[in-house]
Length: 452
Ligand code: GDP
Image 1 (cartoon, rainbow, N blue to C red):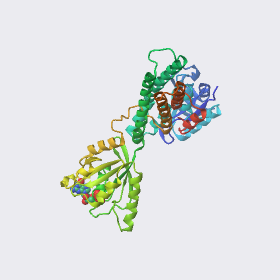
Image 2: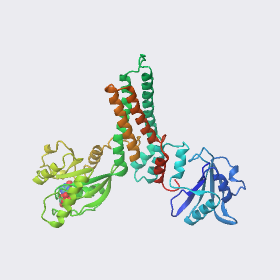
Image 3: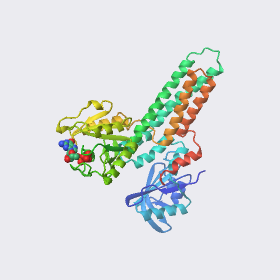
């Protein structure tokens, strides 16, 4: 029998309502010691999913009036008997009620303990459980949709399919190794490799989408670069819709790296408006220029701005040379001023034409950024892995599947293939939580807030 725990489930601060959750074998018994329905009934007499209006009393002292909602195992979030008491959302009311609940026999819940219990009681797999923190902390629609897809079990479903096909291949390989001389239809090296092919592809897609999903969740470190006066500040203002950077005609006025975030479609860009990339004798400005160079090296995405109304200069060419092999979008600005710029030199890059001054080209800009980040075509509603732990497990599984695949191809013994498949399956079971050590589970749920 596990101990009964309680915690405040709502955020601290003023609120119309505050909820205290009690979960465990004695949840209803303990709630009956502190909460008294006006109907005169005990909560113990109520069926699951039933609410009672009443008051919380410490002896004869009324702490508050509110509603107690009874859940009966296994039909609750945790899978255990649970009572949720909704009171007025004042910090003192909730604190005093919680103390009363503790003195009536409940223990303080640890961070994530309710969700951990839900996981241990088989109410949720790990991918769903982990998505809950994402639901709570989402700061954009895309972040929320990614977490919701995992929460609805789409990730779990996809993983189940991979697990099923690997299990099937594993079983077939065992049969084949046990009866190597029998000619059983569908059991040969070619069909084994086909069985693995799908699992391999699905894992590859999941890992690729993880990177794109991560960008949707966390945003992308972006540097805007270009020689002075091409319109970097204006571009930044166009993206953010605000006059934040100083825009002037004098080359070299953007001296510092100014950080700010802007949303382009579903992606959050963490922008730094950098000083013009050029050799400069001016000490104050060279500080900015050095920072700009560093940003080029560390940025995940570079928006390189060029001026459509002027031919390419040596500075432009130098900049272009430093961008080889990076994630770059070439932005040809000032298209409203006509075209003096040779485009051929940009043929190996993704290019977009805009006028920051006239606010033209925003949609194309957004689409190209999505293409470069790999987020184009990634629906936030699709099944994606949502954290490094999950990614690491999937990567281990893929490595093992590839090894199994190679083992088949080069004609190694089927035992060797079987061992690789077992490795792949155990990585996937760790991912879903089917086979996970207590230490790992503890670590995962520790990052949750208390009351969740
Ligand atoms: P930065 O030095 O690269 O940050 O360039 P700024 O954003 O300060 O712009 C330099 C000058 O070019 C300013 O006078 C802007 O108004 C002007 N400018 C920027 N974008 C455009 C554009 O698309 N069209 C036109 N005609 N002028 C622009």
